[in-house]
Image (cartoon, rainbow, N blue to C red; front, side, top):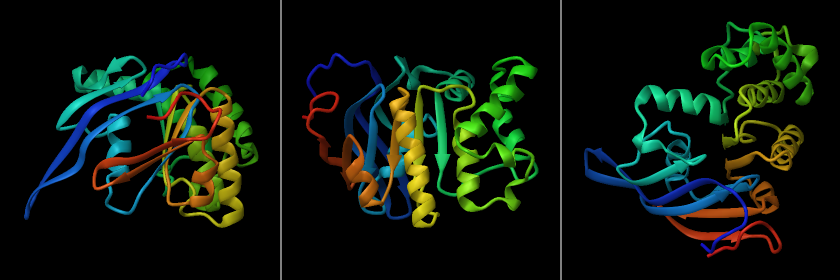
Length: 241
């Protein structure tokens, strides 16, 4: 990739990931190199089993590569201790999952406050105020005191997005964020993700939704653990290889 005047949020160099399975070694990723810039909205696409979710987990420091370099926000994840990585992840990366993964015994408001508690971000009074503000941002502040089981799928995903923003991370990673929603709600969630990119967040989305991926600034296609396509819309940030 050619040099860009834009700030690099994520950089991977020759990243490989091997799993040992009954039939022998399985290479989920086999030499992934890429850069993602600040404020980019990137779709990662490919068939099931191609390595998309493995790549997302490595970008987020949830999984570690067998080989290669992963630099996020200027920090090398492989050189961090587990404790430092956990703290870094909480402050720098927000996660949004297909099945929401909200704590069922906490209200929507408490779910958003929780990451701030874990990361010791903001004062106690600021955490509540910030959580309410984030729920308002995603259009669900009226449900702040409801538990996840009393919310629709789209409402739960809105809470999950608010939670991902709790510590004001630079990067948002999403794994099939609209895959469990009806088409109208999916459009609304997609609009929220677009707005985060416009706000300067780097948003990386694993998706099977071709309509949404076509609207992304950049589409990275993976097959059998390698990148087979990396396309940007004309006039967008950076230059494709």
